[in-house]
Length: 432
Figure (cartoon, rainbow, N blue to C red):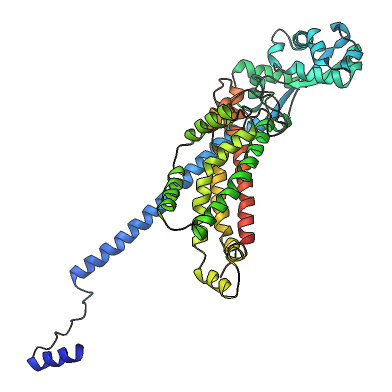
């Protein structure tokens, strides 16, 4: 084309116009250059502002949680003198070694006797200085050493929420005066609150613990991972490597994508109707919560798994098939190891979502008051997000700091789980 047309054009006397070089020094060109640089600077500043605002919100969240929650990890105690011999408790040392010791001490009036001892030691307001669960600490001490029933002893019991607040931060003048009086008499001590890490739920904020909910979350996540990960990965491999391309496969793909966006409360209703209503599985059990959450995060793992499998270069498959590998050998020896980092990333996202979910677990009864840690997958249990939700609904100030402390534990659990998954992802990652 070109040689003929150029020859004709030249023959006709119409030579192409010579393109003039751009004059970068004209005023119009200088304005265009200034606008381009200004637009680039604005875009850069907007991005920096977005990152700064995000970091500011994160810093505010962490500061709020730490400032309110660190006090939940401390415990204030009162050294309470007790004259067991003068209490005349109607209980014998033999009863303390048998089943029903708790009932025998409660029936003997130990709770009232501890309150009277506090009044005798610290005045008329003395009973307000100790926790409502202080008598439980005394009860356990008597069970451990029955000889206390015949002598005097000083037992360290948890202080009330007001005294704990006065010992750790600002409080009312009367409460601060009471805390100062106890400190002056050497009856007030503070230390790390091990009960918060080893105990379970309670109606007394000074006696609550996070271990029951933490163990419930661990068991629930274990069931969720055991069900969602293998089923999600196998579904992703089948859809990408084996499924025929027809309308039924397209329908399944669209359904999976839609399920990933379904509100979590819908999965709670599904668990309530199917697992509790139809299969009569135990209510408030980790196995029911795990199965429900597995249904919820399975679409996320399938979508992430399909994208990871799709990202494996076709040359890997062709090379493996070329040297005589079977289809299943190609998948499990070459495709799956290369796609595993992407699959684990999707699993991290899904498990993080499941760990923070509350709505579906409320629907299957995991908001019950559980005062002991679950023994197995069928025992009544609760989980950390639900426990936080229940404590946040309490009006006592003691529960406010315990709620923030529980949020810190939940964040640490989430970070530990993500750190493990990131380590596994980097461990199996292959670069080419």
